[in-house]
Image (cartoon, rainbow, N blue to C red; front, side, top):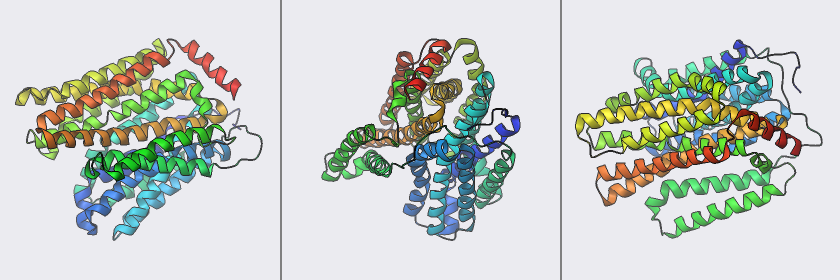
Length: 470
């Protein structure tokens, strides 16, 4: 139930971008300030690693739930819930004296992101149309991609000169600003009939399956790939996927409505988004390799990727303009292809010193150019193809693909790198780790070529078909 007279404003966009930044810039900064947090709080490294990983895990697990709830109870309301959770979670981190408040705060930050991401995308579809919606989604992407890119620099600078807890004080300020800026935005809900029944069974199966898959990928090498624990977890993972799909197919109020995947543009955007986010594994392989294999300091390896940050921020609006001229498919193809080339050249570890350094820098720039060009056309394709009454849920699935793709890509790349390094040298392990990410980019490109229509008319038509089905 949207207000028919209200149209989205720049103030609304600014508020939503501030909300998105509370996660991508501030919550993610924890990855870059591990020594400072450990020294200040005196917590064990194991507890700190758990605290860091819990945010992404809870975000990925509950984002679809929050997207579905946003459609039912209100997209603005769920955005506010997410911002309040962000404030409370950040406050707990500021007040933390040990591991307990640190872990609880990180869980709340993950739940906050799960609420904010799909609900804000759904609000943008509700109150912006056509080129204006594409512009709004570009700024959403700048908040997301830009925030994640600036994290290492901003987080490190704040931690060094002001103390790490100031990162989360700024997060609280940004969340409160977001709440103030969107206060005039009317509520937006899906038009639904009948009593809503939450799918607790589906959520339980989904959580068990995702945790099992994650443990297999991250701990398989330590357990032993043919050990009993690994084989049991692998069996749980496979069985969980099968059971989840079958269970959800028979539910009236399913956690994930698989009907949305009958829409080819939506499926193409979501699958390619998952795989292109998995290419983030390149970052851990390349950064580890230049430090271990080439003797770079942490600062030097960080500077290597600064071209990625500048390129991704500079290309997001360019991708939007290209989409308006050519349709979504071409910039998605170009973006995936440029990303593939950028990642591939980083695997040329046989190159000598300075030449390899230059090659990696250029590779990072191409990586950023490709992702920046891809971002808005992909998000707009997913949003435009989603039926109005399920846009929160569809946005949740699309953003879950981002989160899980990123998590699995990093885990798989790190596992491949360390496994090969144990049997060979660091140069070969880096090349094999990079090739893994080239494969992700190649399959992403194929999904765009096969599933995304060649022009916007086909996309609009297929969007109408799914609306009629649902």
